[in-house]
Length: 112
Length: 112
Image (tube, rainbow over all chains, first blue to last red; front, side, top):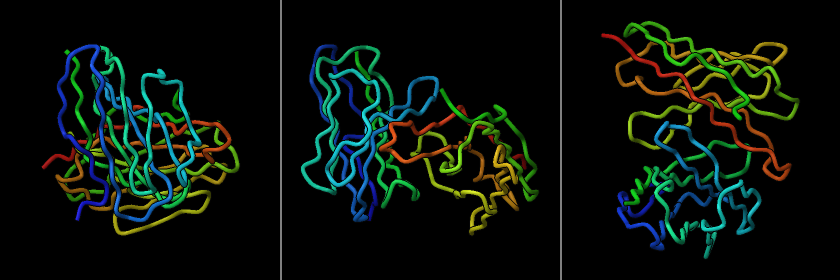
């Protein structure tokens, strides 16, 4: 069983559209994260959730909004997509803030 | 704004030890050092972490200097499958508002 799973794996969409990326973890972890990896391979934290509470909100556009229906899920909603949003988005989870994080396989988003 | 500095690339002969250095000269007392790696197109994979003592697990060893300003990840017997980008990360409590810093990493190539 996959520990952290993301869907879809690939997403191609037009500018201005609204899209969502889903993430689920079956590890019983308390904290989940979203990271963005751009074309230069820089991996940056976007959000983290601990027990359904947002505890880090990096300086990302408010077009990006994380939604956590329960502890096992942290979905990423993106409104009014822009070309610069094209990147690979990784979901991750950890038991606590200071334990290792397990990453999903990523969602490659391409905005055309 | 990475708080770690790593060489951009390194080569290692298969079967030999790979020693990957990391400088984190501004590290503070409550910050952990984590190592992750990312094999091409996959999600980052946790390797090891430590606070001030040296650590060893089935994958690698982590040597942290006494002043904690630098560390070295050691892969004792590198294999071709260890070819990846290795990230040294300094991590703090999320609710302090500080970031999780993924630097540019070291691209390790294991040579047959």
